[in-house]
Structure formats: C-alpha cells, structure tokens
Image 1 (cartoon, rainbow, N blue to C red):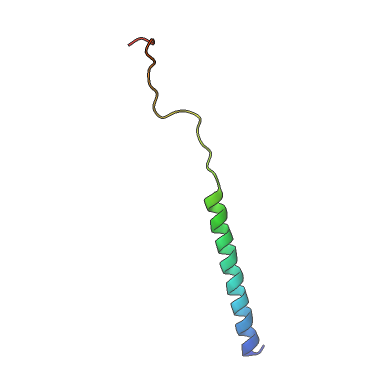
Image 2: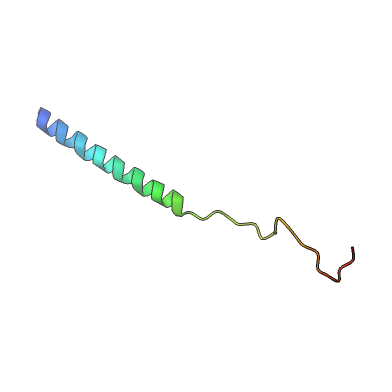
Length: 50
C-alpha cells in the first residue's frame, strides 16, 4: 500500500470517527431523562388543618 493511499485512508477514517462522535454527543444531549411525577415540595392548602 502506498503512503499516499495509507494517508488518505487514515484521514477518511479520522473524519468518519469525528462525525460519529459528534452525532453521538448530539444524541446524548437531546435524550430526555425520565421525569418523576412527584413534586419535591408540597404546600398545605388554607383549609387543610395545621
């Protein structure tokens, strides 16, 4: 394999890995975590005891 072909394949592989890493990072950032439906703080209503 000539040096020019090896260099071109290395550049192409590096570019493909960079694109895959970028798309993976975007997919991770856009993933929405499961949100619990229970509130962290609850306030008593005016007519509910003490």
